[in-house]
Image (cartoon, rainbow, N blue to C red):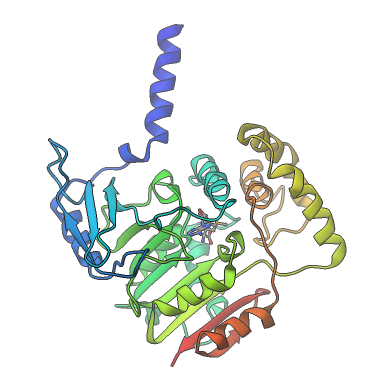
Length: 347
Ligand SMILES: C[S@@+](CC[C@H](N)C(=O)[O-])C[C@H]1O[C@@H](n2cnc3c(N)ncnc32)[C@H](O)[C@@H]1O
């Protein structure tokens, strides 16, 4: 009995420890992939160039799988582990941000491998990248040879979709979500970096598209995040952002009140609650359109968790976001068929 329980614990721990996940992290191919990314990385503290230093720990054969990145300007030092540069700003984040990170890590640990995340399977996620949801100018051929940043990539499934469209995809997320979701890091077209969208660890003008779906409203300063996205886009490139829209007073008050309680519940209790109330999606509209019983119980529980768990959540209007785009010097803002969705271009 005890041996059985120990085996289950060992399996569970190996599943939870991102450093142990996935094959192919120690091969030469990944090393070359990482070196290509290196040119685009920047110190999140001062914006300086980063150089790879071999890890001093004995027995660490591959300086890319594990090691350190050192800033040439301010000498700040950042770890690389499990093939992922860990470029969170030194000095920490806003007070509620660690809670947000934990809430999403819990979400991706438990739900990222569902067939449909946010009600969409892989084919539907790809479709979202080539239809009117991306505005009038971005269609499948546009992606070929492009560099795309997926900011707040979470489960990371869009990374694979961007890569399949011919782009090189870089996912950045504040938490371990991409590893917990087993993003295929041995795919040479896909990179993952741990970082904060409010201080993106990339050099100016590094990407043709900065894609940010459902992320900025979970930060303490969405406009600052928007400015960061605009900063890393090249001339001629675009930014795509979707944020939660501001709703009518009743809905805002009801959900706001519920979230005062749910965002303070312990993780396992909240997950149980989300599971219990998942069928209510049959009558309560979600932004992804996930509804019970067309979506499974677990798929509905994921979107409920996404709504009720993160401590930070703000709501916006399209005009507000268009104002951010203008202030960031972007042009041709397009109103997308989803509320508060925008594509804007760097001239
Ligand atoms: C609602 S999920 C969206 C995932 C994905 N973009 C999508 O469209 O399905 C939000 C993600 O943003 C990440 N996130 C939240 N705050 C962040 C920050 N300050 N910097 C980077 N990522 C952040 C969370 O860890 C989470 O994975």
